[in-house]
Image (cartoon, rainbow, N blue to C red):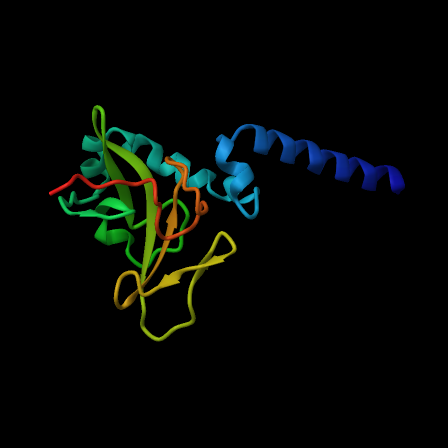
Length: 160
């Protein structure tokens, strides 16, 4: 029986080490490094939108207003109120050397008086978008404030 328990512990430890080895270097800064494993469906679903023109093919509507410390939001109305890691309501982009670059994703849930939603072990932020709860995941651009923080001080908007 002890052999089975030891085998289970070693298997889990080995799987965790492979999972952590396969994620970007930012993983160590996240409060729970296993959140990167939970974000795998998000990567799988949104990686194809790294090339900004493809966002429209996924139903994401382009905006031309850059929100300071967030970037440009591309919103898919069909994914509003989703808590599915694979269907964030918004993709966030920043101007880069070769056009807009994907930097983050965001889930948006309408506040109808319910308890604050949670995803990846984190409660959604309140007040960033009036009448809504929001959660960002900075999976394509490092955020020194944290992987799931609402704002990223490294994101710059063009000067008007």
